[in-house]
Length: 180
Image 1: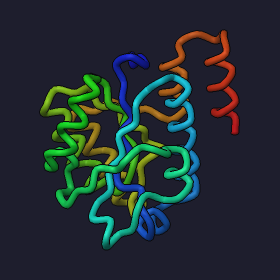
Image 2 (image 1 turned 90 degrees about the vertical axis):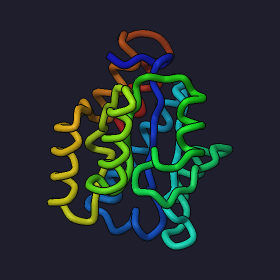
Image 3 (image 1 turned 120 degrees about the vertical axis):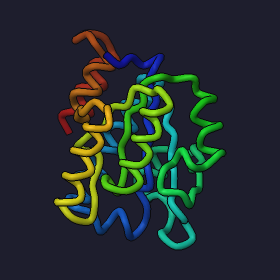
Image 4 (image 1 turned 45 degrees about the vertical axis):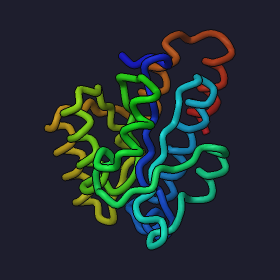
């Protein structure tokens, strides 16, 4: 079970034209937005990456707005773990459970998850927060990620797992976000 004190949200490469070209892009954007807002309430840190932003553009505006002050790690390697700055920032949070969202499922997300699992992290793929340019690549990415040792979850499942109890202000705030 994930807890706010042990969890980090990793958002991989939700950028410019690429974010607009993936399957169910509007749903992806909405769900990642829900995760970010809930993680802010629950004090779960967020780590953000951008793959070659000079070519692919920066993180989409709606997420940038929610993540004001959060500077993305720029990368060229498909796996986030291939970028030393990413590994330094990841380790600085001292969290064992990584919620993963982003694009593309079968490339950057997949390769990052494989590396994170090999490094000993507990990886939780938020399946309604990942996509690819084709449904087939999205699905094969998710299947291979699960086979590599990640746990599959959804936005709602992860958020209620983080909250744990159906009472209090945090629960009410998370419930409102989930119902949107």
